[in-house]
Image (cartoon, rainbow, N blue to C red; front, side, top):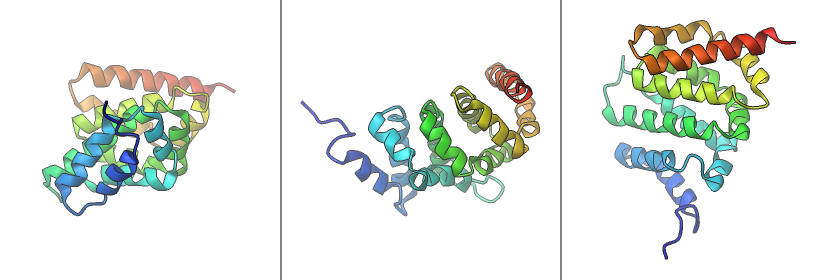
Length: 178
């Protein structure tokens, strides 16, 4: 019988590896967490804004206009995938808002990479599915992110379009209700 990765301080050991200067180690650690994004012990880590900032920073770290490093892209993708899964947890979403995830959302929209956009739309959709959805909608509106979502229409991707329509409808409903 093997212990779960979340036991024996496994989460903290892998989290430590995310700080490695070796980009491949950093990516592998981030990808490991992507596969654990709904694990309760892992969610406790992400509910801590100070810890959550690392995932947001990894997403923002890749900029194709100045950096063609594939490892940074793969780390950004894994980080955003982790956030897509973890944003099903309302306390993680609250921490994301406190940590100004709007900056990260804007970065992904500006980079306009189809893979990252799909993960981002899942994050936003999940953020709008909780009791705090109205607060999240107000936050996203204050960040002026709604018009920026239109970048997704440049891709001929029905899945992106479907999620975008759902987000716009949800935001419209939340922001127009009293």
